[in-house]
Amino acid sequence: MALDITELYNVSSNAIKEAAKTAPTNRLDTYADKDFDNLLHTAIDNLQTTNNYLSDAENEEIKWSLGETENTHDLSIALQKASVALQYTVAIRDRLLDAYRELIQMQI
Image (cartoon, rainbow, N blue to C red; front, side, top):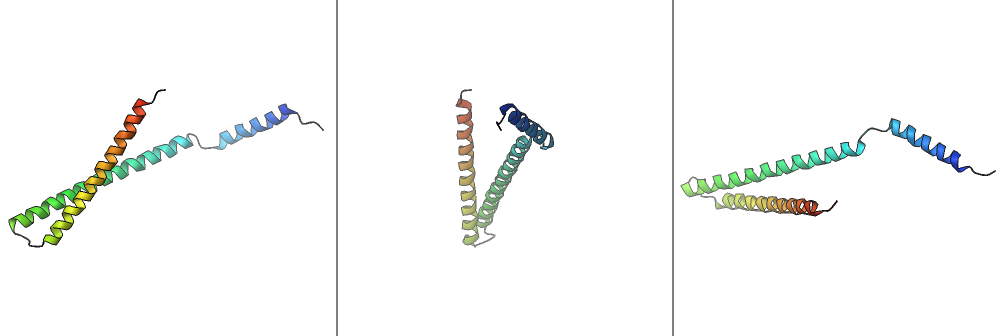
């Protein structure tokens, strides 16, 4: 019994057509949109956290300079948190700008 290639092709193409009918449309686009959405919300949350740390550090500096508190420990912790958060945010920004520049330089 010889195998007919056209029958094999018809079977596989019909199976592909049926699978395409039942598969969710734009599945990859949906995943990409969700991933980008999650990335964007995470970036915004990180920026808000960095801003909160910077304002907390500024408030601690003001309290210490006005003499409202003598606890330099809280001041140093707030300054260190703000510094680390700002360094992290700048590093992420630099990476995103590098990726953007690389995408812009790609030739299609």
